[in-house]
Length: 100
Image (cartoon, rainbow, N blue to C red; front, side, top):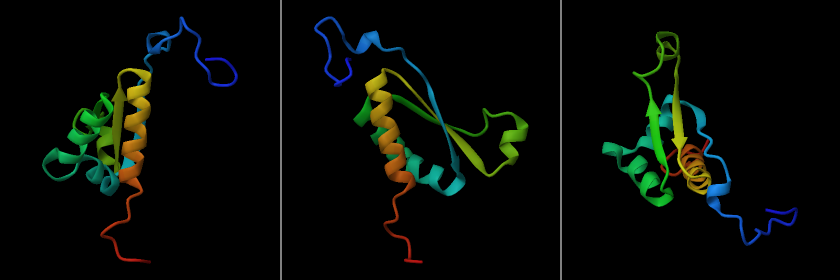
């Protein structure tokens, strides 16, 4: 892409490197990302085309003791970008919570 964000004729999504994204999430927002029965994380995967996982047991013991989870997003750059937006949308979703 040039400075204006326009893409040249020869440029395609495959020209960008696949870079995994890791997001540290507190337990409650991580649960929102996963959703009841995994429904939310499945929707994120289908919507974005990215591979999205929330790690807990795969983490080293030190990390498992913390109150954080790690979301790992991989795939094509645009798919990962879509997945990041969907994860953050759920992390900051205040619906169903009392106003403070």
